[in-house]
Length: 102
Image (cartoon, rainbow, N blue to C red):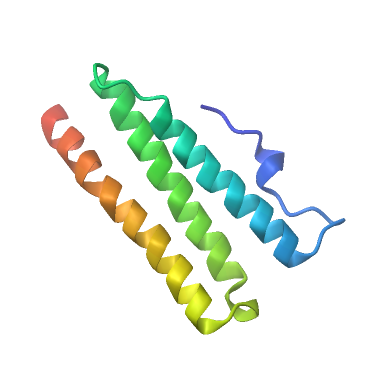
């Protein structure tokens, strides 16, 4: 799936917090959409969807790190842990697909 790259750029007409929320929300929605489109019968498409979803989660964590200074410490830790754990949850599926392919 090819995303519109402009959707993930900060715009000059919005504040940093607003831009970060928009971009992070877009990335999480993209990750979820990737996973929703998978079919249990298509291993290759599933592996690709998991890979793309993990990339989106990593990019979301990058956005979170960008605005870290503006967040309460505990809120940052909670959100970072959620995103990290979601990515780790997908890592097992990705690793299994790679092992089957090799």
